[in-house]
Length: 442
Image 1 (cartoon, rainbow, N blue to C red):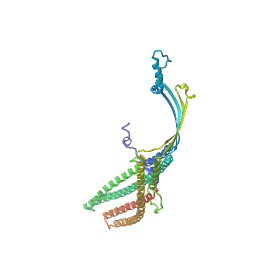
Image 2 (cartoon, one colour):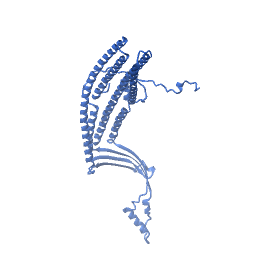
Image 3 (tube, rainbow, N blue to C red):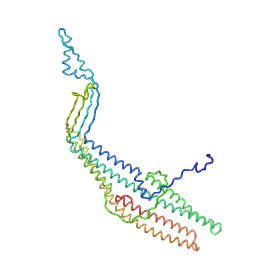
Image 4 (cartoon, helix red, strand yellow):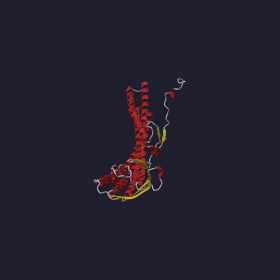
């Protein structure tokens, strides 16, 4: 039965249906599937969990303890009481002295202790350290949120640029393939005319040269298109070999928006500055006295049947003050380090603000240049299309050769490629401008 099966079912790989995507669908998929965006979101969740962890330090800590201990303690033998009892043993060995029997080794006999108790501890006063720590943790969540926004914008704009790269390489491939087909047709016509003795060998060599010149360009255009497709697949969280069918974008809106919005990068650095300032207050509190409340209640007995009975209940309440006197200048060093990090972040923010200001002005100029370039490319293409129409009419009338017609067709294809690149350049300039403003591609 295997020999009777069709070869396509035995050796052929299953045909993958191309995934239809437009720009909005590509961005939505990247937002849901891109690993970098998922990692940034997990960082926000991590900071959110840190808030609960830090807040726990300000709440009472309650613990239930159950303990069994068997111990042989000889400290009684070495104490004053043990010395007194040892005198009785010495007098019992002297003649004429009768004392009641006493075995001092009983003082060191092994004993069992069963303990069950509940302990509680509560920080009373830490000079605002615990509240500030919770505040810093909340700031950390906001800072991670700004980082997530930055990562998301970077990835989405990367996907948008990858989308444009696929369209650009596809357009270039279509133009080169069209030129290749035209060169093939021209070569076939010249060979036919050569057989009919209406063309020369030089005409055939020229036609063959035109065709062979297009072949490397076709291979390079195909390789560029495949690579752009693989890059986009990686950004979308897909297998690099997944075939894609991308919708054309058309012309973008040409308005230039210039509203002032704070970039997430700047907001993130400002949040980091606030965190370092708050951390300085925490470091200052380490140099001041702290007060803690500790309490415990439970039972301790030498036999299990005496547990949870009086008078075997035991309890303790104490308030502790800890006043640091000298820590080897550790806190001073930490404050100096914290202030240095604060200054680093401040200078990074200033540098980023200047860079973003330049980015915004550059994006505005590039948008205006892209609009002018598109207008020029469109007019050049219209002129090239009209020149091709006139060349075809002249060729039909026998006024020009087929080589001249081929040159006109190649020029029209080049102008078409330039026009499509200019159209995609409008989208690229729009995306760069929106990124400079801290906005998503769409």
